[in-house]
Structures are given as structure tokens and as C-alpha cells.
Image 1 (tube, one colour):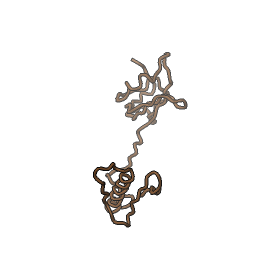
Image 2: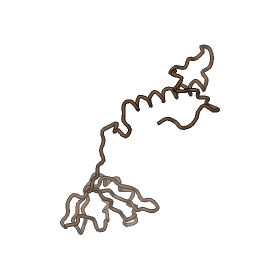
Image 3: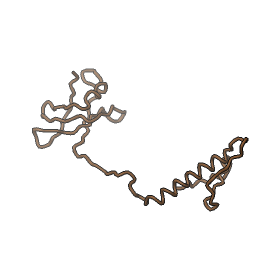
Image 4: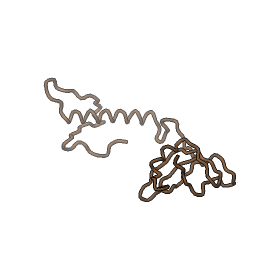
Length: 147
């Protein structure tokens, strides 16, 4: 997408015009390079890349093959901030990659990641439930044992 700003004003003085059909800026030997010359070079290069992109790709084409994925087994488990006067957030990283089990429900889940509490949200573990003894595989309340 071309720049909508007019750079042919102070302090840039970018005089590039696509209709002039020039793609080279010559420098005078023995003289300092001027900012105007460098700005014009940038615009020439930007224009060439844009023209190549417009020729090579259609608008909206995926450049790198990709897809949208949705994992319906990815859940957030909110935690209390302290347990036995110890801050839970100091141990959250230790749980990543481990399997936790609900003491009363028997639900097991693999811990995928975590987020430390903010002013509006408590400490959170992100889990994928593995198995359950009940129909609804969820933790009802979570108390992590720090070992």
C-alpha cells in the first residue's frame, strides 16, 4: 500500500514521481550525500517492492500457508493467590508440562502454560484435560500442593 503522506515537503523534499520513469539517483563525487537523495532512494525501493508484490500476489492471498486452529480442550483454571501464606505465583512455572490431579474429582490435566495475576485477574493455569471419573471433566476448585 503506498504511503498517503506527501513527502515532497520540508524537511524531506522527496521528488520521486513514478511517471518520470527513473530508478536511479546519482551522487556527485567529493560532495556530501544529501538527505533528499537518500529519501528519494528509499521511495524508489519502496515503490519497486510494492510493484513486485502487486504483480506477484493477489490481494488477500496467503503468503505463507497457514490455517486457523481451535483447540476445544484448552481451559483456564483460576487459582487463589496464596496458599499457607506462600504466594502461588512463585511456583507456577514449575507446573508447566506436568500433570495435575483433582483431589476430590479425580480429574487429570496437563499444564500447558500459566499467567501471573493482574489487578483484575487471579493467577491462572492453562490446562488440557486428560481424563475424568465423571461426565464433566473440570476442576471444581483448585488447591496446588507445593512440594
